[in-house]
Every structure is written in structure tokens, then in C-alpha cells.
Length: 282
Image (tube, rainbow, N blue to C red; front, top):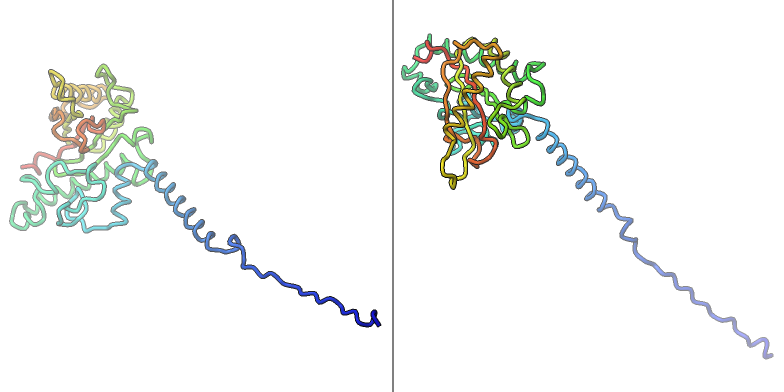
């Protein structure tokens, strides 16, 4: 009887249910993909900034923020910035924003400041300047300038003529510590003489320097800028530029800085200007 009264034990089985682990979700993949995309865009931007010239960067900036051109030296617009782009500090126009007493704007031409013949001659000169500029910088194909030299050249067509700016950097100056032309400047002189064959206009050479510390007893900025312009004139003549084509050699010292920091090495530069013909300047 005792054996018949045995009851089987009751076994209760509990099943543990837990939520999915965090690493099985997909939200982190979206965040990671966004991060990788942003990094790729960043490195592409850094590469573009390093591989392009100032003129090309301005063209890229104008492509993404197009404006209506009101002058030959910058984008359009009549706001406080006059239509300048984000690179305005490096491309400030030399003489106003497109108009001088010699070169009137379209509005002033309507008032009789320039005859049709004078306007036609100016347009013809602009076309010649732009062709020389394109050939020099390689916009239409192969450039006359090697890549290592091109980054030291900036060009623009202004009211005064075709301005070709040669500038140095701390790593590659135009003049050495003794004030003598470096190999870079000598090579640039040869290139400029070759380019001068494309444009028959008279040439002006202008010297600019960075500012010197105010504590020095005698500031040599005027003497230095004049000597540098004269030395470059001599280099161009040695490279077989006809001496008669040089109309003037001018010293500007630090009065026309290219960047806001007057002591920046970028302000050490030479400007070679293919002047407009005397007939169109009257």
C-alpha cells in the first residue's frame, strides 16, 4: 500500500526571455556611414585646396555661388561686399570695383564717358589679354608654366591692363636673405618674357613688400620694393625682353597689402602689368 501512495514530483520549467542585445541593432551602422562620408568629403576638400591655384579656387567658389558679373574683377552684386567671393582678400581689385576715370562702367558709358570706338578698342584688348591669360595659366589646354611655378602666379584683367602677380612664400621666397633673386624668380622671369610675346603692349613693373617691424630705426621698405622691381626689370631684359617695352618701374613699399596681415610673406610680390594702349587710355 505504501508503494501505491507515492506521487511523482512536480517539475516546473521556467523559460528566461530576454531582449535582443544592443549590438544587433542597425542604428550604429547609419551613424558610421555618415561619419565615413563626412571624412571622405573632408579629405577631398583638403586635396582640392592643395592641388588648385587661387584663380581656380575662386572659380570653384563662384560655381557654387553664381553671381551676375557687373565688372571684370569680381562677381556681381551691389551689397556691402560689392559682389566679392570668399576669396576676396586675395583678389582685391587694384583700382576700385571696376570703374575709374580712365575706364568707365556700363552705367557711366551710357552717360557718354566712352565712345563706341573706344569701347570697341577696349573690348578687343580685353580679348587679347584673356587669351594671353588662358595660355599662360593653361585654361585651354597645356600651360606655359610648370606646376611648381604656377602656384606662385596670379593673373587678372583690370582697368589698367593684364596684371600678372608673382608672389613668394616662406618656403619659396622670390629673394634670398641678401636681397638677390632666387632661382624661382629667375625662372619666372623667363616665363614672363615668353608670355610677353603674346601681348605687344607696354609693360609696367611694380614692387611690393611686407611690412617691417615698427621698432627698427630705419625702415627700408621703399628702397627694398624699388630695388626688387628694378632687379626684375634687369632679369627680364637679360631674358631678351626689349628694353623699350618697359614703360615704368614703381615702388609701392607696403602700401598695397594683398592680405590683411601686413607682415605676411604673401605681401612680398612683384606685379607685371601689360598696360592698355595709349589710345584707349586718353
